Length: 200
Image (cartoon, rainbow, N blue to C red; front, side):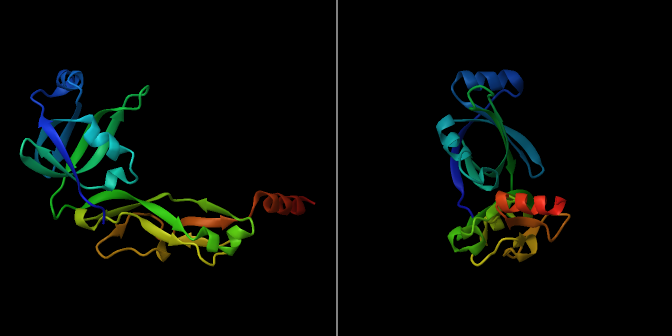
């Protein structure tokens, strides 16, 4: 489970585009906290407090505690609008969460021990099909990542959803419960030779 990041924000008195522009003129990033059957809260964030978080892996499944002038809100980032030229955030949406909220998030997949996979040593290529896996769970149970151990895998081996270690209370959202997460594919030269052999 990921740690909770703490962020400080100010209340934004005006909603809509005018209020957002006013916040940007003050050097702040406009944002909104919504959900959990409560009224939306318009806020403005210090860029430094959020920009460093934006570039971290799994930004959208990291819980945050936003302090808005003394009132704390437990949230998950839900959307970021960025400037197409500068790539800086223009507006953020945060989903308010309670301890019993059930939410859908994307959890990154980490692969380890590539050097211990005979198939990769012999020139095979790790073909990643799912970089992230969608799950439904309570905020406190969100996994930081799923880990796939490649030790001992040969060319032609596949890793499927069903082989992952899914923590209790976490449900994978997938039409195919045995979808392929990754496979070790033959190197291009081998594949091309096989294709040529098939056409002879």
